[in-house]
Length: 102
Image (cartoon, rainbow, N blue to C red):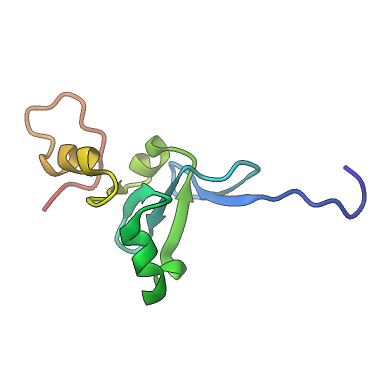
């Protein structure tokens, strides 16, 4: 790479909760305070930006990283995954979320 040429990098939250630098942007966004992940075009997330949400915004390379970092799906933009999470782990052999519904 030549002098003065910069490469865009992105800060992503990894499965173990540490921040990693990536040349590829994240595919999902999240709220570190609420521990919720969702699509980058989520209307709920966009609406919360004016209320200070940007300071809690994190990004994930994929859904697996979000789940392993302890986040749950957004009820607005990931409706089917949210319903799956909300129904809880009882009777399910494969329930990936660490954060359980209340």
